[in-house]
Image (tube, rainbow, N blue to C red; front, top):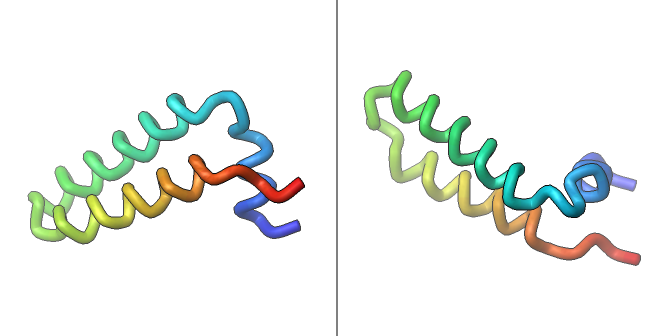
Length: 58
């Protein structure tokens, strides 16, 4: 089982909280870099959120 699969199992039922955490982390990066990498951060946030939304294999 991959690390991402383990994370998905742990976060099952808490997707909204995980998405909020990803948003906060991205906002922190944007703040520290003064928005210089905002586009890349937004893309990374969406990709991570998509991973959490996918259903783990059963």
